[in-house]
Image (cartoon, rainbow, N blue to C red):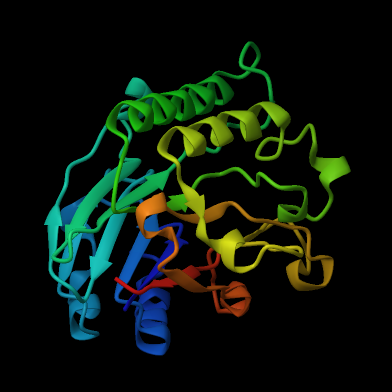
Length: 261
């Protein structure tokens, strides 16, 4: 068995102490981070290695985006792709010794206006998702786990109010349709919802809320998927809501799952 977690950390250097705390307290075998906002050579590896995470595969850039896979288990770099030709560090893959490939994604947020004619960023998001669909359809991934901040809450119970968020970026029907097409193209199984099929689930709460916990206006933007050949091995899903209350937190919290492989 091994465990995996995904977390949009919103600056790995600013929140290195929080990453180290999570590694000490929860000890996932693999931790995938998004929005590290750092060149790879500036990632503070010393503290992570001291906690037992000596392996890293990452793609970074100064001040923006960036994805990293930290591991206690040996990893091999399995490449990356510049989805939608944005020139952003938004995806990287690594392969474990058991043959499982881990894909770490940071899908563009898409700006504030849900209209690609008025908002270039929204169009880029849809193009990114379309290329994900096409790549998965062509490559038919096997023995793979996909995690990350996909910046879409697809189900009605993945948001605090389906009705009020239908026109809000991250829950609009066109985004949900594009994400669903990408998921279907790879046959990906949503492990979190396989384990927890009913009820409200959130992994993100806005910084804008005066009291995020009391307001509880969350969205499930962070996901763990697996290909059908290993999806039945997934279990133990959980979302660490208390992490949102740590000092100087990210607006996202870690999402966990375990696999018997």
